[in-house]
Image (cartoon, rainbow, N blue to C red):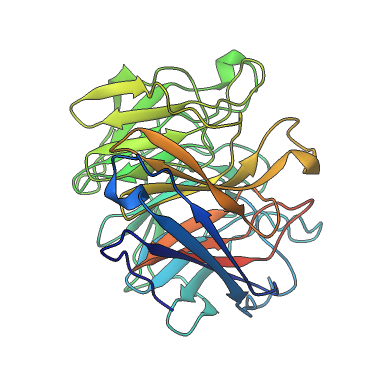
Length: 352
């Protein structure tokens, strides 16, 4: 199913869920929004997508996994099953968007058990940065995976992060990878990072930049890059209420700033983010308290960087969740996993 922005400014938002009912909702956008993509009405359609993960994850869900798009496939790395026997997994899955099926990737080289690690694809290799290990410890490791050969390796020092960290946000600008913020294990002010780290995929050089984020923040893997600017919506912070409603913009060559007048409608972290038709799509997340299921969010928000406007989509996810992984293929965004009470096993596609 595809949908197109037509001359009247209409586009369709399609969501495919696992084991969920079919429904359709329409909502009106602000008529005076300067951006073309936000003008008119949007329609949301929900339909069933029956997908089962391969063994040993069949019947389990994942939270805190990472997703990267490579062609028509999405690679899923690690995550926490919340199963007492399995816990954090070292499973690497490939989701084929054409057949809508999972396969387990047999790597040449051991995949560590890891969760809440940021990941990027540079056109040749996938890189994973930091995260939490099976022992609950933070990692400073950088992992390289080649999708064509299935070769996987942990890069040797000095190709490591400046310190062990998780919940970072990373993006690739075509030349360098930028790793933003993170948490070093403490939820006190000293446990959050305002650091910006640059990684060179060609030389494996790691450089701690002088420039810093406006405030220390851990974003749970979330960042969107539009080719010029990276956007970090929300995140974990040290001060009360321990989550932020701010959107931080990091423009390459243009500095770091908090966007004024574009705050989220709640203080939250753990949402899934992707870029579609020039819009930042913000899905789910969690408010405080951290482990309260009632604090989980089902909201879908649309942020237009061109007009600095943020709009509630008027429709929601079928159930609240956080710690999901999002990846875009063509005109669709896929969401995997997430914490719903314990763990949800839901595959979601959002298409305009």
